[in-house]
Length: 219
Image (cartoon, rainbow, N blue to C red):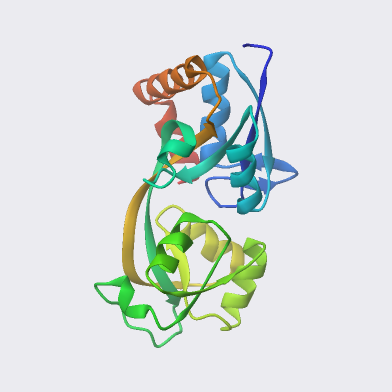
């Protein structure tokens, strides 16, 4: 088992996972690497558009995806390690917009929203009948949002500050959508001993303060 290299797939989602100086970094990335190290397992990480990362973990043995929400629809499709992070998701607009906050995010259904294919918040909005424009990359989506070509965006507690800094914008939160945990989702064929070893490593990291130290660095 120690000689197997598990392929970790992730997306550009600051501050949890992102590419900087040609290296995948971020809160979740550091947590994943440390968990594998403690479990005595090997992993290689690559960054892709979300749909490709998710599809690889779903279809290919020895592959997994992170940071992903664990939903009822996805529960039996993968084997799960985590949670590795917690977050809250909001519908938002540019701070310069005329939008007013509301109690129910569904009240903004008639406005356009930008997102990436198969991203969980997008699935939630699509089920509620929102008009969603799908973009191939975060850069493309955010540039379109900045120019006012889409009305709304999705932002989280964890990502808001880094998104505002990275794309030189200011958000106005309009409505809370849901709270979520982020997980590692492994191909269904992954041996149970691997899942147990990684979950044990995460539990030890929580107990000895390692998770908090990583959070202090990024969040």
